[in-house]
Length: 146
Image (cartoon, rainbow, N blue to C red; front, side, top):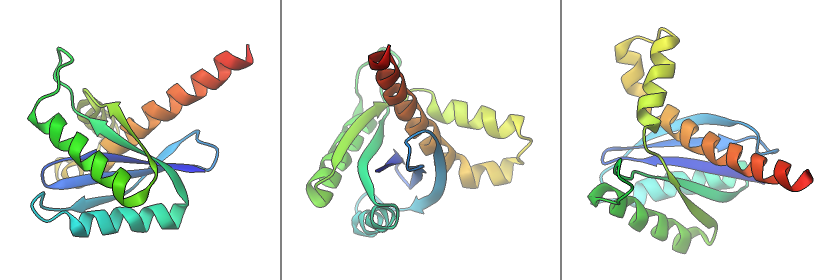
């Protein structure tokens, strides 16, 4: 089964999906939303869940550099809980510290213009979040095989 990765921001949600083997993450969309009206964003996420037969959702958890969880992290935790209640799927919070910075570096190194970067940065951050989760899952499986 596939996993869905989300980078939940205040105005956009980056969305990524894994391949069927759980090896790679690909960005699929940046959802524009308002936190005060989350219904359209939740419906769009459900669309991706159905289309890709998702079994796990990975939500980026923006921790402070000292490991504490601030206001934005609490909002992501609440959103993850709503997703879990609404979909009945396993929802995992994933430490996303520096995922947007890493996404920016990848886009800059690929010589993507500043204007285009702005449109895809959240989707790329979702890819980084999901890929980190997938890599950890693979390393756990590989260590069991040893």
